[in-house]
Image (tube, rainbow, N blue to C red; front, side, top):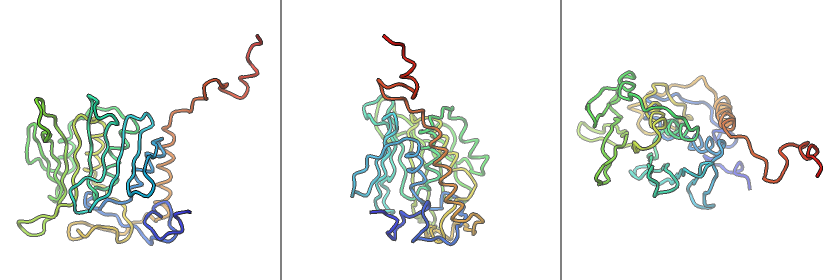
Length: 281
């Protein structure tokens, strides 16, 4: 049975049939835009050759990279819980190069994609000076040194580099982001958090931080913004839902172009005429 017949959030952004969207909003700052459609991440990975191992009937997504080296898990829980919804890590937990990246449910998928796109595209780049990048986008350094931290211009997000909580002889480091909004002068409401081990691919860490710091607004369906409207700006976009659909499909086509060429099965000719070109015995 096709899901297109159901009144469900699953019918977007690539399908606007029952859940027709009249317009889109441009929301800023982007870290307050809400999670968005998870298929911005999962559809891209599937188009790039990741395989789906999700259990039918269970509300989760399990994806494995084409080389079977990486796993992505999406397991929604309560939006208010601090349990991460998204987890990306190597498939083998005993690997010496083990690392983990975790993101909360309200983390904008466009920011998560900054990490996952770099991972799946095998981008190789040094970490670079992310603090210089942060200050260049208007964030202010509130701590310096190994345990540095930068605060967003509206003071609703903080980016930190801190030691891992795991006790060991040589404790590692992680990059973390926390997003919250003030309720009163002394209380804040936590929205989402992210944590990435520094042993993760440096280009992926840089991709996440770059996407977090980007000042460009994010597109959201009308009324899709979380109830933090006192702290965000939402302006009706000139981009139509149909154009967003085409943008999404173009991203998937771009992902498919990154796939390696398919090798012919063993024992078969590599081209239709190859068999006829074989020398007789």
